[in-house]
Amino acid sequence: MEALGRHILVEFLLCDPDVLNDVPRIENAMVDAAVKANATVISSDFHHFSPWGVSGVVIIQESHLAIHTWPEYQYAAADLFTCGDDVDPWLAFDSLKEALDSKTYSVLEMHRGPINLLKRIPYNAEGYRPIAFERMQDIVAKRNIWFTDKDENIALSIRSSGKLLYDKTSRYQRTRVFQSYGLGKVLTIDNMIMCAEEDEAHYHEMIAHPAIFSHGSVERALVIGGGDGGTVREILRHDGVKSVDMVEIDANVVEASKLHLPGLSCAFDDPRLNLRIEDGVAFVGKAAAESYDLVIIDGSDPVGPAKGLFSVDFYKNCQRVLKPDGILVVQGESPTFNREVFVELNHMLGDIFGCQRVHTLLFNTAAYPTGLWSFHIASKSDRDVKRNDENLVDSFVRRHQLKYYNAAVHGAAFVLPNYVENMLKEGARLQRLSKK
Ligand code: SPD
Image 1 (tube, helix red, strand yellow):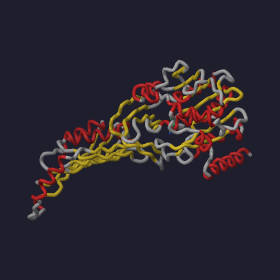
Image 2: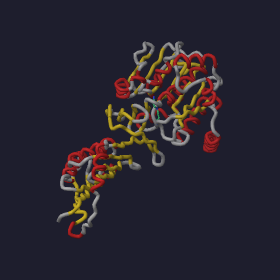
Image 3: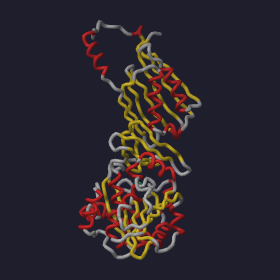
Image 4: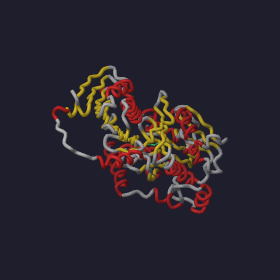
C-alpha cells in the first residue's frame, strides 16, 4: 500500500533495566537509531520519568522517534514514525533492539496517510522552498539531555552536553562525571548530584570555615567521605591546620575527581593530608578518644554506603574522638527535600551533645533539589559557633578569594526562617513525647 509515512509501534521486552534508567544512554541510542535509519536529526529531548525510567523524543526532519521506558518491568514502548522513501524505520528498530538489549519484542507497523484514501489539492508552496532551504542550512541538531536528582515529588534537573567523562561502578555505587551546560562538570553518585564545578564552593566553604573560625585553633581534622577533595581543599587553606585524616570508602570518587575536577582535587598532594580508602564508620569506631579538633562528615544522602553515617552509634563515636573543645560538622540534608532526615539528624546530635550545643546553618546551592541545604554543627564545649573574628575572617576571605563565605554570611547562615525553626522545635516535641 502506498502511504505518506510508516509508523512502527514497538514493545521492547526483557531489556537491560540499567540501560532503561540511563537518560544519556537512551538518548544516544535513539539519536543513533535515527541516524542509522538515514533520518536527519533536528533535536532531542530526554528526561527522567517518575519514579524510574526515561521519557524522550528525537525530532527528525522526517517526523519523530519517541520512547518511554519502565526499568522495573524491563520494558520500553517506542514509536518510530518516518515519512518518505529515503528513511527506513526498521533500521532504527534494529539499532534500538540491540542498544536496549531487548530479548523479545512485538511490533506493529502502520502505514499512515494511505494515498488511495487521500485527495491531493493544488497546494503550491514553491515560493517558500528557497527560504526553507536556506533556513535548513542553519539547523544544528539541538540535544536536550537532563540529569535529574529527585525523590517521588521534587526534582532538580541539570542539562548535560551528553558527554560522559567518567562512569565506573564499584561494589558500593556508580560514580559519574558529565559535562553540563550551566554548572561546569558535575559529579554524581548513583542518581544523586554530589557537586558541580560552578557551584561547589558554596558547599565546601560552608562545610569548613564556619566551624574552623568559631573554633579558632584547629590543628588536627578528620573528614569522613568528601572523596572529591573539596572539603579538604578548604580545610587546608588554614595555615594552623597541621594534619587532616580523610577517609573515603570508594576510590572511584577520588579517581574521578583527580581526572576531571582539578579545582576540587587540587589539595590531594598537600603533605598534611593523610588520605585513606576505607570505611569511615569503622575508622571512627577504632580511632583514639579525644584526638581531633574538628570532625567533618561529608557524606552523600542516607542510602547505599552512606547509610551508616546517619546512626546514633556513629555520632557517639564522633563525639568520643573529638577533643574536649572539638567541633563536629555534619552534612545536614535539606529542610524541604529531606525533611525527616534533616530534623532527625539535628535531634540525634542534640541527644548526644546536648541540644544547646547543636546549631544548624543554611546555605543556597544550585546543584541540589530545592536549592537550600544545611550543615548541623555540634560543639563538645559551650562555645557560640555563630561568633567569629571579623578581621581574621575578612583577611582570610580576601587572601583566598572565597566565593561564598564571609564574616556576615557566617552569622547570617545560622539565622533560621520560622518554618525551619518550627520544624526543628516540633520534631523535638514529638521526640520528647515518644520517649514518655
Ligand atoms: N544530595 C547531595 C548531598 C551531598 C553530599 N555531599 C556531597 C559531597 C561534596 N563534597
